[in-house]
Image (cartoon, rainbow, N blue to C red; front, side):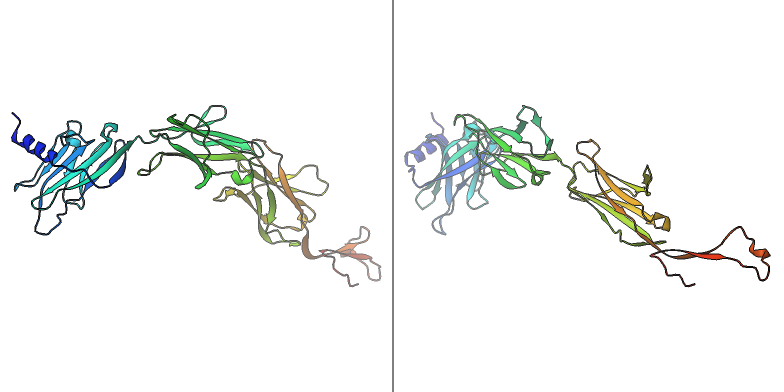
Length: 381
């Protein structure tokens, strides 16, 4: 004989009317699905007696909630759910929660609410369970998997990256460049293939591409964050500009200057060196400089040289040279010939080898006045 509870359920089933629009719900495999059910009585004086959940028009419920007795009872009729299913009547609308959703949970669910006085109310939901797309894998055109960064590439060459991901349903694979949609045209293939590909081609590579973050995203649902893979594009680039800062002309003997050399646009950052070459000298003198700096954006390298100017520096050539250590590109330099001004230096020169301490009265002594100055100073005889 059937138990009293089962007989009661069968009696309810015979009077069940399936009606109302179907609400579509999407849930990701392994997450929690929430199926809503409106339990609000049509009148204030009325109250809920029984809530039954059915799946795929099965005549037996998969979950039951009995509120007729003082102690409310909940039980899962479906062994597939087991402890994964629970009913929350403390929220509005009430919810049937299915933990750790499986593909087999997919289907059409109907919630039937029986009241003490009012007619039965039903609502229908279509639960779709999707398998989250896999984290995208990025490979080069030669088949090498890329992680973190790719390159370095030379200016003017081509970049080809293939992004692959799979899921159920098959994902939409797109590329973003620094957060902006860049390429949404997926590679051709069978519509039913679970794995989808998108080949990114940038040719030729320009300076604006250096340091870009290329993100491949795999989307196959609108209820969870789409998995993605970020790749930073590294490029080798020559010095674009070099200049000397804080080197006035003319200079004044005895003055102190902190001369800056700035090299922009190079990657990897160049090594900056200083030399000072005297007129007609065969070899330049290497000068010590302060520690080299690099801007936050990585495209400006600086070096500082502390100089105390002497009159002997006049006519010498100060040179700043930027060299990329890997010798990818020829060194780039900038030079400036120093013009040093200094006050007059006066010196009296006696003709011949005369000892002025023994000059006899009436004797003629010839003397020259030599003045060294820059700019030249007038001589008053």
